[in-house]
Image (tube, rainbow, N blue to C red; front, side, top):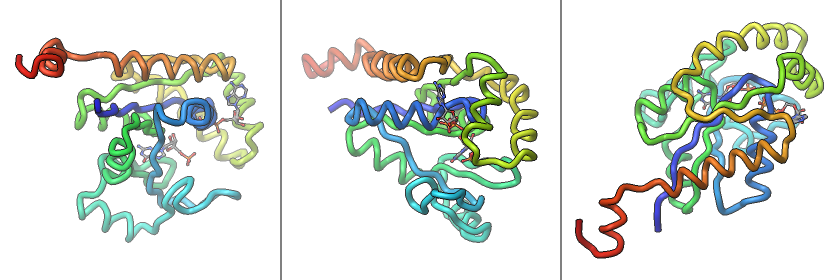
Length: 202
Ligand code: ADP
Ligand code: 5GP
């Protein structure tokens, strides 16, 4: 069986990354799965440990870091976030592609460690739509919203290693576009590997 690939999905807070990935997995359950990250931030209402994040203390985060458990980590919004190797391996072992729903510094670090990882940036149809979606979600304070808005322009400046750009206007279209990227990337191969599979030699 051909092994799945690592896909990074990034984009401004509130652009719809979570919504798109959840819908993709609901529609195409065997195609890809997301991982659960570790964070030191407090759970928002409705968020559950082990489902949305592994909510850990600073000390526990440090211990995992020291033990070399993280593929990447980032300090963001005064909190820390990290992707565990074990989470990535769990999904790859199940024969699916992995989607890391992480911010862009993390994306760039993943690309450095796994050069064949594919980086996808989700764009809002406009900045006004983005603000409306964050407010509509209702999970951040006005101060947090203002801070995250100020981050948006900076995030665009960091988008250089990203190869695919998906506009989340109509949700169903965005899901299909992400699916198309994953399927097309899965068809990429080297002639050497193809020959090896067919003839057992180079
Ligand atoms: P992110 O994971 O990027 O922070 P979310 O997935 O939480 O963003 O989406 C932010 C808000 O925008 C949610 O309330 C979600 O329902 C809404 N949303 C996401 N995609 C769309 C879309 N295509 N059209 C309208 N609203 C959307
Ligand atoms: P939130 O606090 O809104 O859940 O997430 C804040 C930001 O951190 C989002 O952009 C989210 O994608 C990102 N994030 C979540 N988990 C990780 C992770 O493990 N690594 C990195 N680099 N970013 C993450």
